[in-house]
Image (cartoon, rainbow, N blue to C red; front, top):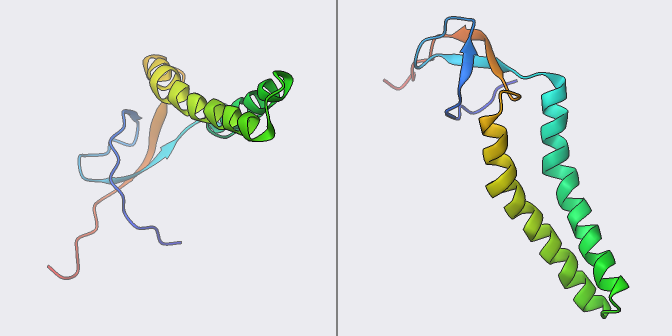
Length: 110
């Protein structure tokens, strides 16, 4: 399966002795992947439902309850971006490991 090359800067344990410019394969534990997926996909949906539910309990119209849900959704994104993400980056929990390195492929046009 061919993938378009995309450069991303991350910090990882270099067990494969990769050099700058090498293409690498990174490993992340299943638990860390599931935790990240929960934060990215489930938390915003929960905030959306909580916002709609709160608007309904407060007796707001359906339109206003929906707007409360959208406000909850936006607030979850802001919370994840500006509070949770910096916290996770300071933790040692998300630990990437370079498991395989390959020399960079030269352009054939050169």
